[in-house]
Length: 465
Image (cartoon, rainbow, N blue to C red; front, side, top):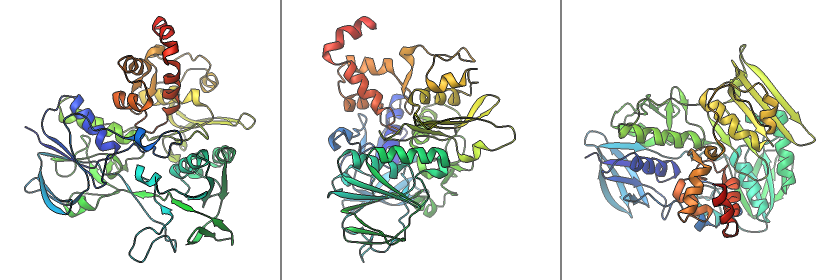
C-alpha cells in the first residue's frame, strides 16, 4: 500500500490531500506542518471574515502533524526525520510530496529585527491567521510593491485602520501591470482609503515609526512587510535533489528522485518556477491524478493572478514577456473615466497574456478562452465589456455550468447543490466545494450567491432550477 507523506500544511498541501482522496487513494496519507494549530486560507486579511471562518479543515482520514520541524530527508531508507514537540520522530514514506510554501526574503532594513533575529515588536510578516492578531493600533504601514502589499493595505483600510502603502516603484505592481494600469490601480487603492507613497524607500524602523529616504517619518503602530518570496529548497538541496529556482521536476512533477514529487512555489517545471496559487493548486491536482493512475503528463499553463481585494478587480495572465514578439497582436482598452483597463496579447487570436482592471465580467471568459487555447470571438470589445459574446468555437457553456471558482473549477451548479445539501455560509461552501480557497477572487461572487439563496428566496431559486 502506497504510504504518501506530504511536507507542508498550507493550501497547496491540503488541495493535494483532498484531490488524492477524491481520485481514490485509500492508503496512509500524512501532512507535516511547522505551524501550530489549524491551517487557514491564504486570504486571511479579508475584512469581512473572522479567523474562524478561514479555517481550512483537512479531508477525512488525513493524519495532520502540526508543530513539526522537518530536519532531513533520508532518501536511501525512504523516511523523513523531524522534531515534533521537541521529540525526534521518523516518518516513513513510499511517495514523498514537497508542498512547501515560499518563504519571505526580508529586506535589509535596520530596526525590523531584534538582536536574536526575531521580528521587532510591531513588525509583522503576513502569512498565517495568527498574524491577524498581531496587527494592532490605529495606524499601519505596508511595505512592498507586489500583490500581497496591495491586498493587505486594502484589507486594513477596510477594517478602519489608517493605512499607508509604501512602494519602491512609482505605483504598486507596475512591473506586472505596466505603467498605465498600475497608475489606475493606485487611484483605486487610494479611493479605498489607502495613502499610496510611490517611488519611496524605507531606510529605518524605530518603535512606532518608519523612516523614508526623503526624510518623511510615518507613524506605524504596525509595520507589515510584504517582500518578495523565494522557494524553500533547503531540504531538497541537503537531500541531494536537483534544484534551480526550485526543485526541478519533470512532466509528471517528479524530482530527480522518482519517489519524490514537488508542487507549488518550491517546484520548477520546464525551466520556470511555479507562480501563483492557481498554478500551485492545479499542480496539486495533477500529482494526485498521476499517483492514482488517472493522469499522465502535466502541462504548465502561464500563471494567472487574481488580486484578492475589493479595491479593484485585477487579473493578470502570463508574464510581461508574453506581450513581446513579432507575432503578437496587442489589443488595449483604456477608459480613465470609468476607471477600467484591458491589455490583451494575442497570437492567432488566442490569448497568451492579459491585464484586466475594472472589468470583472470579462475575467472569467478571458481566463476560460486562455486556458482552453480557444480563439476569441470577433467582438473582443463586447467580450471585455460584458456583452453577449459569440464564441469562435462550439465550447460555450450553459449559464449553470459557468465557472465561479477558476482555481478549483467550481461551477454555480456545484455551489447550488452544496447549498441545498446544507452548506449555507461562505465557509461551509468553501469546505464542501473548495471555492474561495485558491486565489480568493471568487469570494464576492460566492457571497452574492449566499445572499441570493437566502431562505426568503429559496422557493424562487427552486423554480428557476
